[in-house]
Structure formats: structure tokens, C-alpha cells
Image (cartoon, rainbow, N blue to C red; front, side, top):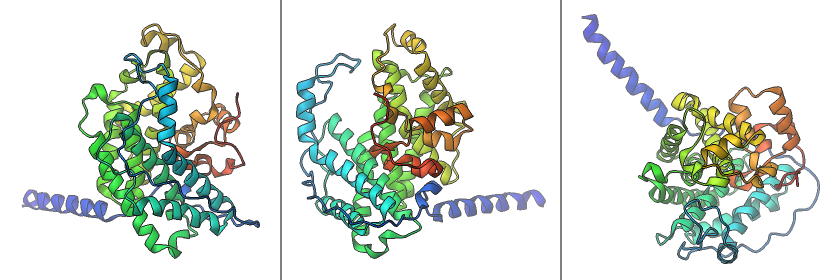
Length: 373
């Protein structure tokens, strides 16, 4: 008799747990709840909105003509790429700057300008073209991560700055949701040999959009992509598809860490601990990259005896992932000291001021470039 009753009770508990999980609102890490700081001073004039990009997302790659390693820069192609994508980059960087200024200074003009830019692109269904190439769909997911990441600071701030702008917020969030759905279509069902840092950045953008719009389907897809990424990390902390970048293998391992750390931090905030995936793969990757910065020889050996190009790794901002990393893991005092020396970290592709979000005690004025030359 007890056995017969146990199964229905167990099923009932599981169903209740699932219902609670489905009903609970998605949230970001606690740093996103920071209040707006109020300071004196006049807001800057709102720049003209970059022309919403509604055309085909077909752009030349800056690595056009390169071999399979995709590591040789084509300056002519890069120039054409930057010219055509200029409005996209402008809105990414511009919204990030305006949100950071607003959160730091509390000037309403910065908030209104950021919302006006986002609303204009939302109303024109920007970046939603279904005609695209690889570089085009890459720009779409980068832009979504940048814009939704910055917007999260407004949506969840305890100061509730969006309360006075319900219609704009509704349009913007609807646009984010549609972009998130399209990014999922762009980057789903790829063979493992094609899943690399691009897929990780796509997953981060969908995670940011999912939390901004409270869309559980977007959140779940991002978590699924994280688990695929974790499964790619070998026992020594290497990503096979980033080793293919040969002399830039270490740089691309490092470039893979910001989106993966952000996804893990957002999942943790919603009760999903991804640190144990594939026997602690994320921590293993981070440790391997930090060791590689000190001695790149293991990366050179695994990447076909190619000496590693360390130029990107000389820019402090490339290590913005250290903020969510030290929020997720017990960083050593030496690493925390190093993080402080390198920061504060500002990365528009992660939504702006990463240090203020994850380590507000370290907040101070700083550039987006980093201090080392």
C-alpha cells in the first residue's frame, strides 16, 4: 500500500517542482539590481539615432582569403566590413555608453536617449533579415548580446528607471525576443566540428534576451548550448575547434570565456549550477587559459607547433571574464589582486561595466580598452 502511494506522491512533487520552475521569473545576477547613482550636472545632447539596419546581413569577413585557420587579416575586406556594419557597431557602443553614464550619474537624458535609440531600431524590425551569411548572423548575435546586456541594467535596477516608459520597454523587449528566436534559428543544429566561440557568443546573446524578456525557452536554449560547449572541453582544458586557429589558438580560447562565464553566472542566478558540467570543464578551461598567458608553449604544441600571437592578450579588457569567474569560483588572493590591477572591466559586448555588476567594491572610472599598451 505504501509503495502504491509513493509513486503518485513522487510524480506530484515533480510536477509541482516543474510548475514552480516554469512560473518563476527569470532574473540576472544580483549586481544588476544596483540603484542609479544621482550626481549633479547636465546630460549630454542625444546624438542622432544610427540608421536602423534593415537590409540583408551579408558582410565581407575580415579574414577573407585566409586559410582554414582563419587567422590572417584581410585589410581591404576589414575596411569594407567596418564601413557596412558601422550603424550596428554605433548602436552597440552608443547604448552601452549611455546606460553606463545613466547608472553612474542619474541623468534622465541619457536614459531617454538610450531608449530612443533602441525603440527606433525595434520599430523598424532592424537586424531581422533572413538573408545573411556567416558574418551577418555573427553581427546579429553580437548586437543582441550588447543591447540586451545593457538593457538588463535598466530593467532590473532597484530604481526602476523603466517604470515611466512602459510602451517603449514593451516594443524593445518584443524586438529582443524576436531577435533571440532568430539567433536560435541561426545557430542551432550545427555539427560539433562547427561549434566554436561564435556559438558561445550566440548563446550569451540569447541568455541576455531571455532574461530581459522572461522567456524560458531562450534561457533553456542558452543553457543547452553551454552544456555542448562544456562537452567540447577536453581533460586538459583545451577546445579542439579553437586549436584550429593555430597561432591564435590561445587568444580564441580566451575569447571563448566571456560568453561562457556570463551564461554560467546567469544560470546560477536562476538556480542552475553549470560549474560541474563535464567534470568542471569551465573552471578547467579558465585555469588552462590563465596558465597559457604565463607560458603559451602548451598551446603552441597543441596547435601544430605554432608560436602563439599574444597581441590580443596584452589588452586588459580581453580578460573581462575574470569578473563573473571570481563571482562563481573561489579566486585566489593573487588572482583577485591581478584582476583589480587590470580593471575596472568595461566590455560593451557583455553589456557595459562588468566590474560594477560583479564586483561593485572595485568600481572606479576606467576605459574600455585597458591600461596596458
